[in-house]
Length: 66
Image (cartoon, rainbow, N blue to C red):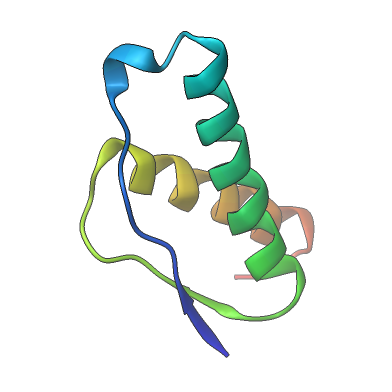
C-alpha cells in the first residue's frame, strides 16, 4: 500500500508540549508505515515532511532496507 503523510505545523510551537506531540506523532506514524512494509509518499517538503522522511529512513535502516 502506498501511504502519503503530508501536513505542517506552526514551527513556533516546536519547543512546546503540543509541538513536541505533533513531531513525535509524525515520527511514529512514518516509522510504522515502513515497519509494516508500505511505501511512504510525501507531497512537498515542509519541516514536518522532513521529520517524516528522517523517521522513515531511520526505520528502514534499522530493518536493513535500502
